[in-house]
Amino acid sequence: MAKEVVDDADLLALDVKLRRLVRRARRQRRGAEGGPAQWQAWSGTMDEALGLVDQIAGTPALGLDGLSVKIGALRWFLEETDAILDAKGLRQLRSLHQEARRLARG
Image (cartoon, rainbow, N blue to C red; front, side):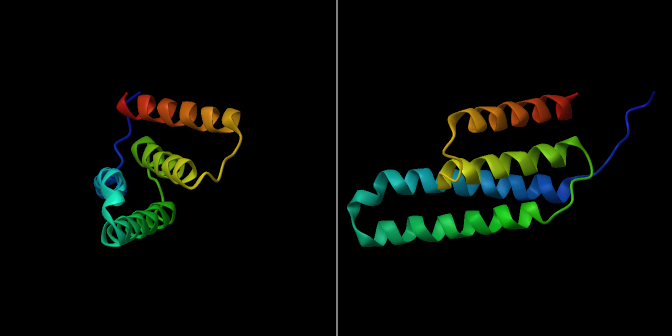
C-alpha cells in the first residue's frame, strides 16, 4: 500500500514561526529582570505566540505532520499558561505529541 502524500505546508510554516517565538520569549524572560521595557517585549512576544496557537488550532490538519503541529502547539499553550494543573494529564499529552511526531516521520 502506497503512503498517501498530503500537504500540511501551512501548518508546518506556522510551526516554524511558533518555535521561533517560543525561543525568543524564553530569551526575553531570562532578561526581563532588566526592567519594564524587557517585560513589555516579552509580553508582546507571548501575545504573538498565543495568536499563532489560535491560528494553528483553526487550520485543518491534512495528515500526521499537521496533527503533530497542532498537538505541539496545544501542548506548549497548556504548559505555558498552566492550564493543566494535573501532572498525569500533561504527561499523557506529551506522550501523545511524541507519538504523533514519530508517526509523521514514518
